[in-house]
Image (cartoon, rainbow, N blue to C red; front, side):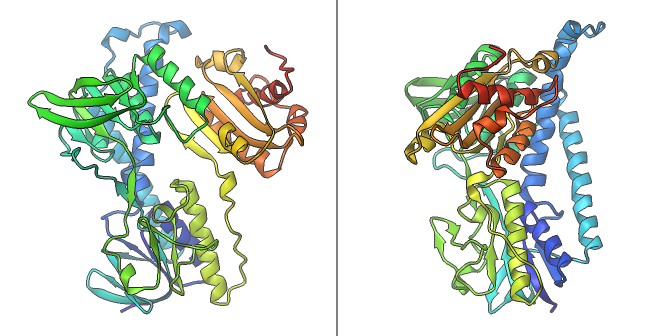
Length: 467
């Protein structure tokens, strides 16, 4: 039996960051992981491996237009993706990052315990048959693809987001159920690699959680530039597996039968709270998620929960910040001189790694109106921007949602080249509580993609310079 000040269960972006922060402020820390390597879903089955696929697809698309950039000798007709090589490269990048996390644990003197962690109550945790004690515990067990009755995945023809990362055969026709972040990401990948893609979404627009204009414009780009068959207000009622593929029967605005070589079920994830011993504690679970306060504390004294098992935005960077808050509060409760700051969930950046990318922060137009704001918006396209044309991606736009009376910026929504990088500027603007007028008077370098910010601010007031 080992004893710790802090024991973290789960080594994803929330868990391993919490472990490091706990060690930095002077706690003895243990980190529990059931998988062979550290890193959790984000590193092994989510964010990182998916981005390696996206990078390959993006580069393949660029190379097909090499002649327009003045590069001779590239025969676009002979270019084709090598899925086995893509999977191998993905594996190398994942392994490198996993080893990096292992190094950080050693550097910060965090004890790694391999095995499934289960709460026993009273500050005790079972890991692979051994009992360990901890003064404080952080649960960071994450989530898994959500099973859908009637659409059970088999890893062969009917896939989830885990399966498709290791696919070695390019789907002739990939049907994707769900046009949230996962669905549009893989639609971007496989349409560029050469698959025919059908994207099915039950809601009115794709990316239904984003500003409506983002989803509508992205659907136009998908249809026009990549020939993706986008079907909104539609659902798959049943499927029929066949020798050469999967027949999907659709109902809604665009009903009918679609036969794909593969079906990707990308309709969300479920928190992993079963079997971790919550029944041995006073922690409350509401609709599958653990109930917490602003410092990530559960109803059980000394027990915290972060990441995909709580009802906050399920994003890696949000989980990391929650891990810091929980670790610092745990340390403070044990007498350490640290001062945790609750997270402002109204200002978290969200990134969707489709192509073109989406980066957003704050309220969308509909939400701002629902909150009673006298809303004023400004939209500016990337098309007139020199840098967007230089990089060959003059599509999409930036939209600023503001309060008309005070000029306060309520939300910034970007669809276009490097949007997931540009949103970092938006984070700074929101944190600084910039007004539209202040943004207009802010100087940005030329030529850069960032020049869309003051132009969108001018558009709010109807005086954009480049239109």
